[in-house]
Amino acid sequence: MTENSHVALLRGINVGGKNRLLMSDLSAMFVDAGCDDVRTYIQSGNVVFRADPELARLVPDVIGAAIAERFGYRVPVLTRASGELAAIVRENPFLRGGAETEKLHVGFLAEQPEAAAVDSLDRDRSPPDEFAVPGREVYFHCPLGLARTKFTTPYFESKLSTIMTVRNWKTVLRLREMTAGLGGGR
Image 1 (cartoon, rainbow, N blue to C red):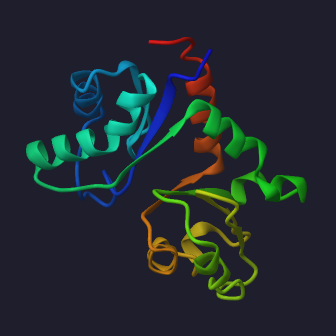
Image 2 (cartoon, rainbow, N blue to C red):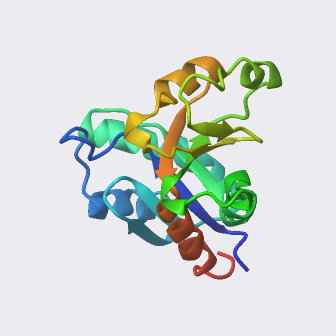
């Protein structure tokens, strides 16, 4: 059972020498918050943990506040339950079209955007790049690479009125494996 397994995705840590945060310090914050089986993946703020749903809902605020208090900066913290992450992997629309997986990314949104906001996005902003927004995620297919796309985080945040953090497909798959491997309830 993985219903109590979750992933936290922090935006903007250890990028370009800014917002330095050791994963051991980050892990300790999750343990201090009451989470179990805390594990990190790479240095960019991916944390897999077990917690009951009530605690998991509090994690973004608790961890965000702990980072601000200890390190003096604020970073967005988004979470997804293991089942949500499994659905994200299953439902990637670009996999059905045979896209190269190294060209795929997922933008995780803090809130589900309104349909009108999604409709206002300019699909021709960055050819040949494509995106899909079926819920609280933005799936990206960027044939020329994410560094060259005009489908940027600030663009999507301003149009969708919510916070976003992006992970490459390899990271999404690894986080899915890690959450699935955490096992049962708290």
